[in-house]
Length: 315
Image 1 (cartoon, rainbow, N blue to C red):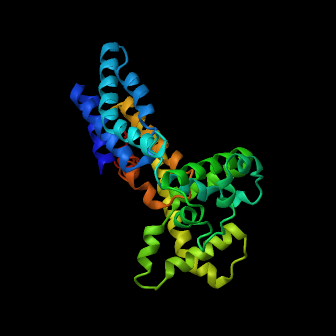
Image 2 (cartoon, rainbow, N blue to C red; image 1 turned 135 degrees about the vertical axis):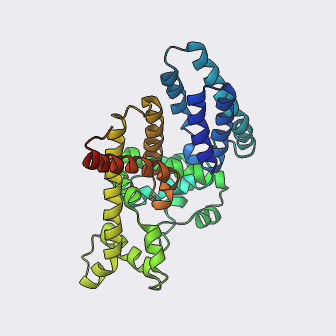
Image 3 (cartoon, one colour; image 1 turned 90 degrees about the vertical axis):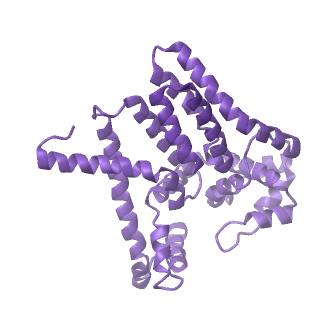
C-alpha cells in the first residue's frame, strides 16, 4: 500500500512540479523500503528520472532531487543507524532476504567448492552441511538454531554464500535466473490454491509433481500429467497476458497523450521489480505491486486493437 501511495504521489509530483510533493514522495519511498526491502536500491533510478523529466530546468532538478533525498533519508537513516549499532551492518538486509537468495542457488551448492569460504567463515561450513527439509532447502529457523546465528548474521552468511556460488557458477545461475523469471511472470499459485476448495490438497500434489519434473527430470505418468494440466493452462494464460502487456508498452511510446518520461519511470519500475525478484524463486504474489501497471498497458493494447478494428484508427 505504501508503495502504491509513493507511485501515485511521485507521478503527481512530476506533473504538478510542486516541491513539497517530492519531499513527501521521498518519505513514502523510505517507508516502502522498510516495508519491502526489495525496493531499497530503486531510489538510485529516481534521480536520473528527475533529471530526464525536467530537461533544461537545472535549479528545479537540484531542488527536487535534494527534497526527495531528504524525505527518504529522514525515514531510512535512523534504521540504518540502528542496524549498525545493533547488528554491525548499516544496510536494511533483513531478515528474509538472505534465505530468499540462498533458495535460488541450492541446486548449485553440491558442485561448488567452498574451501575458501570455510577458511574465512567457519560457520558457513555448518550452514552448507545442514540437510534440506521437505521443501528442498533448510529453513531459516533450523539455520539459526543449529549454527546459533542472529537474524542479521544469518542474512549476511547466506548472502555471502549466494554471491560466491554465483561467481563460481555464472552460466548455471543464468539458467536458474531465467527459470525464476519465467516462473514469476507465469506463476498461477493463487488460481491453483482456489482448486483446493473442491479438490483437497490439490495444490501440494501438483506442486510436488512439477518439482519432480523440473528438478529431477522425472518422466510423468499420464495421471500426473492430468493433475498438472490446470497449472500448465493457467501458466499459458499468464504468458499470453504478459506478452500482451509487452505489446502495450511498445504501443505506449506511439501515443501522443502519454508522456514519454513518465512512461520511462513506470517501465523502469516494472523492470527493476521483475529483475530483482527473479533473483529468488518468486511466484505470483511477488507480482502484486505491479499488477495494476501491467493491467494498464494490457488494457491499452486491447483498446488500441478494438478501436483500430472498429473505427479505423489507434491513436
